[in-house]
Amino acid sequence: MRTYFILFLTSILFINCADDNNRNANSTKAEQKNAEVFKAISKKWEFKFPATKPEIQSALNNWNDWDQFKKELEQKPKATLHAFQMKIENVAQKSDSLSLSVPEKFNNPQVRSRLVTLTTKINSLDTYLHLQEIPQKKVFTLIDEINSELRGVYSQMDEIIIKEAIPREIGEEFMIKALDTSRMANSKAFEESVTKSNDLKKEMPKK
Image (cartoon, rainbow, N blue to C red):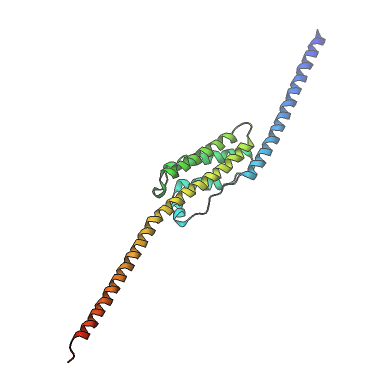
């Protein structure tokens, strides 16, 4: 009976040791996997804000929500995968209010739509980075799509500036034409007046 008891205890100890070894092995594999994911994402993680016209940049400089969002997104996380998870979480929080605080100059449906799509992409990236197994390809695709949406936001703002300039240019052209016409008319009237005056002088009898 005692022998069976010893064998029973030995079996339990053996099973526990095997479980511990498996857990340690799984933990090591998970750490290695996370390290690989961190390295890959760190290499890909780059968000570009396009250079833009002074009129747009001036409005963006005074748009506090955008300024905070931009600074947060441009700061690249370091050291751990968890740092990337915290970073995108902060970015997602700051992007939520962008479509609600657009400067009046750029507050149209097209710009707001771009900002909503941008926020959606960021929230998706936040979700994928917090999964137990992070799908690298999907993360890479979302980073590219976020950069595309950033360009789209700037493009919509640029379009507004261009459209604003068109009526002014037409107006300026009209004014220039009107002035030229007026000058031509005045010049012609002056020439006619001079001609008539000369004719009258010729017709007047000489003393």
